[in-house]
Amino acid sequence: MVHPAINDKTIPEGTTCQEVSIFSQRTYIPCERPAVAIVKNRDPEPYYMCAGCTSHNVANRGAKILFQKEIV
Image 1 (cartoon, helix red, strand yellow):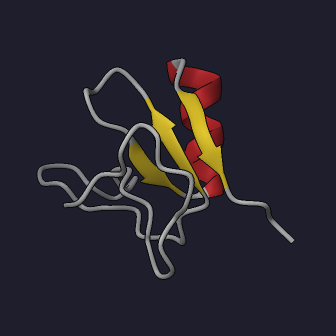
Image 2 (image 1 turned 180 degrees about the horizontal axis):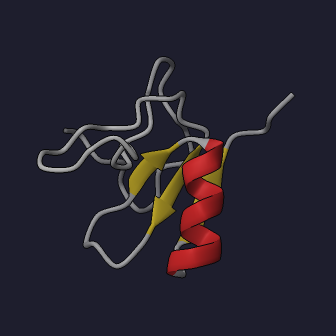
C-alpha cells in the first residue's frame, strides 16, 4: 500500500480509501470508496480516505485533514 506524503496536495486519479472496511474482522480489507482527502491519525503515515471515513476519523478519533479535494 502506498501512503501519501505529509505534504502531498493532490490525490491521484483512481485512488481509493485506505481505511479498514466495516466488513473487515480478521484481515485488512480496505474501504475502497473513492478517496477525497489525505488524513493523519496516530499512525506514522497519513492515509487516503473517502468522505465518510474522513468524517468519522476526524469526529471520533481526533484525526486531522491534511488535504481535501474540492467536491464539485
